[in-house]
Length: 334
Ligand code: ADP
Image (tube, rainbow, N blue to C red; front, side):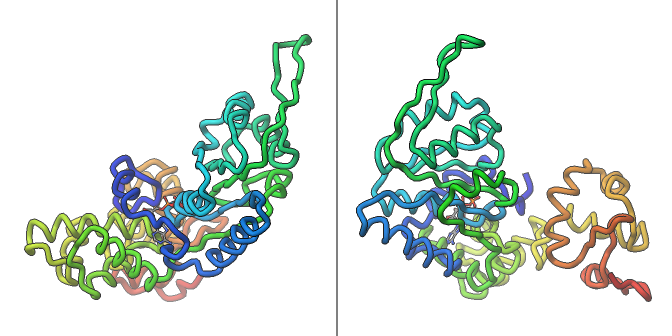
């Protein structure tokens, strides 16, 4: 598991739970989403009704699960947690929904990965607060309609566009989470350090923030590595020097690139003259699976403007050459 991977790792869970904001006020950044969501919740509370279904979209690690928990918390409602991959049969979902009580919040992570029949059952439940429970099999099967009390679905997806529009349309409120600005990441690690009673300096926090790829999950994870280093090497002081040394030790560079990212860039520039080169060839050159290069390394390199995906293959931009300390070849413009 890479230290800069955006998805939750096995040893992240307990640590993340301890750092999770519990109210909207504690959430750092995402001001617009926070305000809109506050309005949705306050309006529902004032009306004494259940809030609209909420769809949260955005890359992993930006706070979707956190917001779902806050929604339930603010409504003083229990949160039932499930995920698209866990709902392969419509019956799996029917079982969950038939146990729902009025005002419950049902969080469905990776909602775009549900099976089609489950999706259909879900949007009926979201619209009419009713599910058809199928009893029996084959020609003798009958659908028994079951009323369910009003409840709120909070769906999370990496891209809202991955959802079929009938399902997407059932969400009264959709929030798009964006990558965080460095100053917000700095606030997040500072807050985390406070919760963990760590001695983190302002420039230490800024250094961690700058290497976190716009992602709170990564910021908190880097903080943990710096803490390890500081506990053993600096008597517990997490300052700029400690942050730099620790993160260099873990091979996370000043832009948050790790060994794989740099290997891809180096192969692209040094071995293939900056491209264009096919992604499979590039993967072989760095000794990785094509999927790993495509799904783990490339998105952030593209986001930084270091790599372009063109019809003829991957191309390094002048910025990529410069980041490696190399001179871009004449005419290397994308
Ligand atoms: P997602 O569900 O989008 O993958 P999570 O909600 O699990 O992301 O967030 C990952 C970690 O980052 C959690 O520990 C959470 O506390 C922290 N985090 C995410 N967003 C924020 C935020 N806006 N402010 C403070 N901490 C955050």
